[in-house]
Image (cartoon, rainbow, N blue to C red; front, top):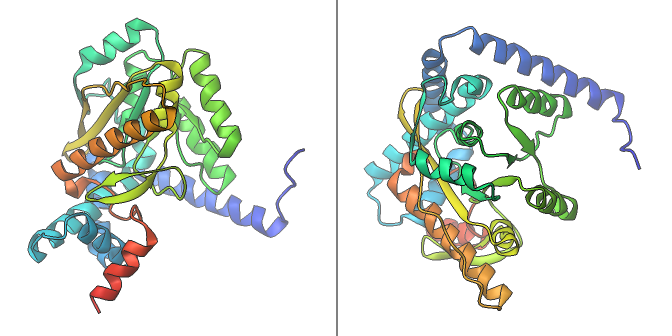
Length: 308
């Protein structure tokens, strides 16, 4: 059954938002890439701490790294806002942030070449590190056929623009939702295509696994797919070198064991993925999105009550 057409007022609002998105993108694309990136970083570094999101980021940081001195915590929060602002202003420019464009170096490119040559599908995993959009360009440049999962924009006109812009340099985006999304991922790998998943987002269901000494609910899709297809889980991370220049690191793969106890094997895979995410966050805490409520609601509530 076709989706009903939106009410006129909502459709008009969407179209106006899309127009604003076009104007914003055009203005940034008129600037040199490093200038646009620096402008976003400076703006968000100044304004981000004044928003409600600052409290979320601070509490997330306290939950993960409770022993940090105030000075170090403030330094990380400031770095996070600068990185987030750079990402926002780099968003319309991602077609420039590619290996071919000279702005991305790859550590472990030979491993990607080997995966491309094998012809076998792979489950790529990563997190909201630096400008994570760069990861898609690296995968495409390696010659691996891959569907990149993402969260679709609420505005369908903006979403269509995002999909079209990414397709212009070879990136196929896929927004999995519920059972239909799970079937789509299965179809991708059945057809021999790899999939890429950001595995550090809040997830209300799934598998409980350790993360920074706590237990968080985690999306098990990557582990389930790897087990079903006998595929490697290939972690990637993006690091900001300077300005709008990046390094993509191809880490050692995660190979899951098939013990016959499916639930146990999935839990082991999720635990390994969380350990990878945690390790990368500890290495570059100012380049991760502390704005996400990654911990259980009760953890935030308990922290808030203890600080009163």
